[in-house]
Image 1 (cartoon, one colour):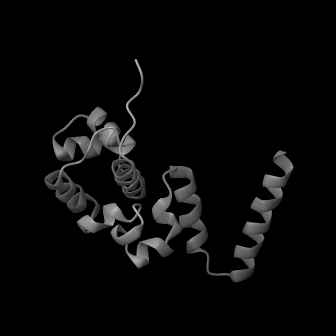
Image 2 (tube, rainbow, N blue to C red):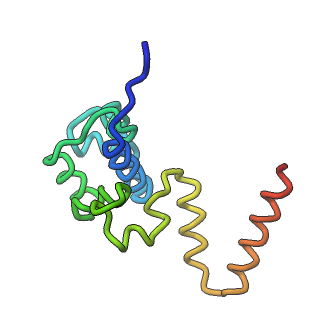
Length: 128
């Protein structure tokens, strides 16, 4: 049986749901509990295999403390706001990457920021 591929807009909205969930440090189970659905349904939303209805998007917006249009920041074109297009963290879905970026952004010393970037670049080169 072949896996279902979601519509590109549904996939983008799902990625944004995952990003917001991770940034809010919530599990799929916790989001599902708040929505009164299974964590499996949350997984399907995040993968874009199931479309999220307008009323469900409204509920998710309340959980994450964002407006409904925030779910379309991944979509591009007229569906994305200029602010969302400028914020790369809004496109991230890996929880470790989000933690790293948040920690980096919390640094106030510019020299320390440069040192962190140089260290990461050196580590990346050494992998090869």
